[in-house]
Length: 114
Length: 113
Image 1 (tube, rainbow over the protein chains, first blue to last red):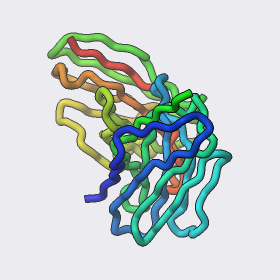
Image 2 (cartoon, rainbow over the protein chains, first blue to last red):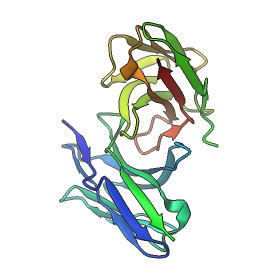
Image 3 (spheres, chains in turn green, cyan):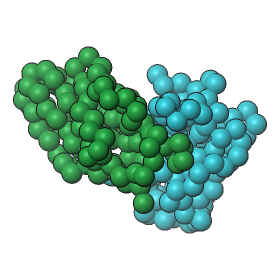
Image 4 (cartoon, rainbow over the protein chains, first blue to last red):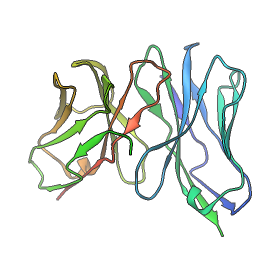
């Protein structure tokens, strides 16, 4: 079975500090894409960042960056200079050419302390 | 605004009843996905349609069914509702490329009493 594991149900960070959310996945596919989504209290699902598995370079979007370790099947999200508005559930997900749907992890709830 | 429209926003119904959730995808997206999110849980994939045809199936109960119409909007039908079906139901759409992210609607909150 293809799965996504987020081992940290909850994380906490001080405002302006840096936090890293962990994600591991399991797939036998060689061509796939990885995503992080944010779900604030409004419950909207918002795309944060995307990574192509064939690219070695880690994706970056402003304060958000990933650490993609393909051999280890690890895809962590780093949030720098954390802001109060970053408080949300964060979901890791992947999508393959075989399973065109997107599979999500259980999520990590991030709290940002002022 | 993701461009994906879901109606209704909220739905309250009794056990044993049947409801229909509606989704209009983003302009240009041929794929529609349905997900279920129970309270404080992750997203469970239910089903995917591509240009009117079922493409993939997840953990969708037999009491649930879906379809995608020629105008690409989709409906998710939930019947013989149980208390455990109370959840947030998301519709998402995307381009057919696997590199494309899913764009989510705001969800329909279903409460079964």
